[in-house]
Amino acid sequence: MSLETDKIQEFITTIKQHAGYDFNDYSERSFARRIDRILVDSKLSMDDLIIKVKKDADFLEQTVKNITVNTTELFRDPEVWQSIRYRILPRYESQNVINIWHVGSSTGQEVYSMLILLNEMNLLDKAKVFATDLNTDVLEVAKKGEYKYRYNKEYLINFDKVIKENPYNYDEYNNVPYEDYITIDKNRDLFAMKPLLTKKPIFRKHDIITETNIFNTKFDIIFCRNVLIYFNSNLQNRLFEYFHNQLFKNGCLILGAHESMLGPITAKYRKKGSAYIKK
Ligand SMILES: C[S@@+](CC[C@H](N)C(=O)[O-])C[C@H]1O[C@@H](n2cnc3c(N)ncnc32)[C@H](O)[C@@H]1O
Image (cartoon, rainbow, N blue to C red; front, top):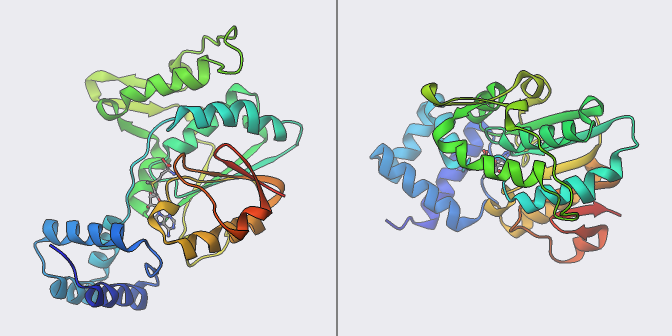
């Protein structure tokens, strides 16, 4: 099914008028794919979908949740986490407080990966960790930190790579068992983060496009991984500018492994792998 651009625009305008979400600067192709999927699953026509979101606020909220892509994993792209551990976090070690914001945290695995790293570096107590997402369903999962074992067991390989190995010094091997952080119950298909981790972060609903910083602080590290790929380049650049303002000097923005900054905005940051340091 190929959707007409004017119908998609009408849908976007309706969502904006009725609930304030602004999808105008989402990447057109991935947005159209999500709408296609919603139409197939709901068995509605585009016209009926627009009528239904106008009339039914709960359906509108659910539709917005269905637009978002929530794929994530523990220590996603382990090389990035190795670099965060050995190249980025030491920059902030001597501070009394380290403020961290995960934008688009989804179900929380990215946040728990960071908390595990912080604990391994004895920095957990001085870290203030905030995490936000547009989608309240994923935030509820994130707060509990409970996942399906069958979908997450393979990420224990990532854990070993980041927590046990040091790619900058192959003589070093930290024999840290995952049981220090994760409870696994195969009979209940449970892969749960331990309370040491779940009690720490503050998870909040927040729309990075329409809302400003709700935390009343600047940050040392902002994660915004695999969120901007769904946005067009205008919006990406606006957010790079915005994150620059929300970072302390020498603060660091961490993007997804396949995301990068282009154009004049690059003059304001110094690139270090997947991390961009505010100049
Ligand atoms: C693919 S997930 C990335 C999760 C995690 N950062 C990672 O890299 O594994 C993208 C997340 O961004 C969220 N998102 C999309 N648009 C957003 C917006 N305008 N404001 C806040 N979060 C948004 C989605 O709900 C989704 O949970």
